[in-house]
Length: 484
Ligand SMILES: [Zn+2]
Image 1 (tube, protein in one colour):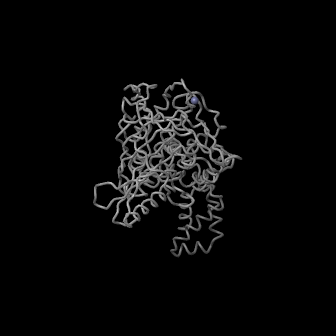
Image 2 (cartoon, rainbow, N blue to C red):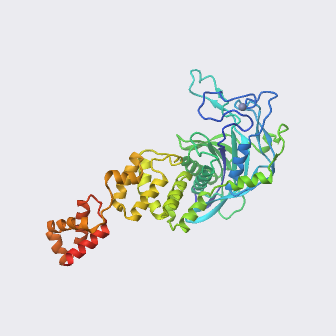
Image 3 (tube, protein in one colour):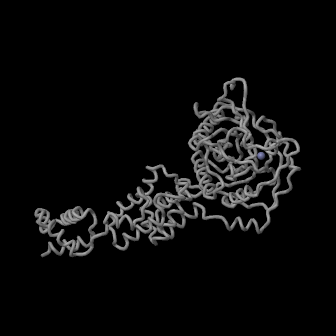
């Protein structure tokens, strides 16, 4: 895009709430069930069926609102969004319109090392539509099949202010959003399965001007990678249109990931096209202050706050803090190991150095560490064995690997394999003697002033004891022996 233009981007994300049942009926929300298994008169929109609100869904939406720094409204309202589509049998979607659940929040992103707040204009709750299946059947050329399993699944729509200025910022916003929702256990962040869907409103304007240009809405961006590509494509397309003397048309455009371009889908609906009105089947959504407070109290520490704590309290680097808070499960694993061992730095090093590699090799899901092969308790115990001098740091690596392979505790491994560190001078002296006798050259070099030769000799003793010797003790013994 020509640098005389500036991008103005807003994102609208639909996030499926992780409830077991739908928003207004007790049908299951499980993904991948046989078509139309999870349906009832309510979510099929049959005449006379009445919606009953799912309280857990509201609690999750409220958590999201609090996590995104929003004001949660004690009163909000359900409205009908009217449109006709085969996957919407009622002919309207129950959503929230002029009185949303939460408003005026923000997410902090990092742009070139600077913190920037992206405003969250509103979060409202709504039900999902069903799914039209256009391929995969013998008569797909002539027919479309409908699966209503998804119909009525609870969603929140999170709408940003037009504060985003580049595809990079959009990507970072989404990364932070996904992370926060995952920490709160309200959404699984899966763009490929459609539980997190994102549309982008994109326009450009001349730098230094206030007035927004005409925007287009990009849909069908179903991966994080495509968010950047789709926005970049659209920005340069709009710049080309303006440069050639044309004007941008307000419309909805679909991202085509095979051709890597956006294509016009339809002219964009305005809100009045949907004839919103309050749903007469549902009362106002009224939250009691006490209940709201109980949700507030159940909020866990969010990733940004955790990173801050890790860098300030534990003196870890920004990078380390970033890795250790990648997922809530990993962050909690670290915290537990740090607490039990009293040695956060060592816990961080072991997790980042060895454990993450093991987890990766055996494809352990970092989002779910409920029964890891190595528990925080085991890691902490091992750190304490090193601290007490029972095993050397070198042997600890072997113990770690063995713990991971067998699930045995470090104490058992050390006992079974006879890995206890040799610190007593009596036992070490004879080994030191034989190493000195066998390495006359190195001994002579050391005596001639070459300090590095001492390291070599220590290494020989470690080798002779299969790493079990206490390096400090060996060092001292050797120095004494060679001084004489
Ligand atoms: Zn149902």
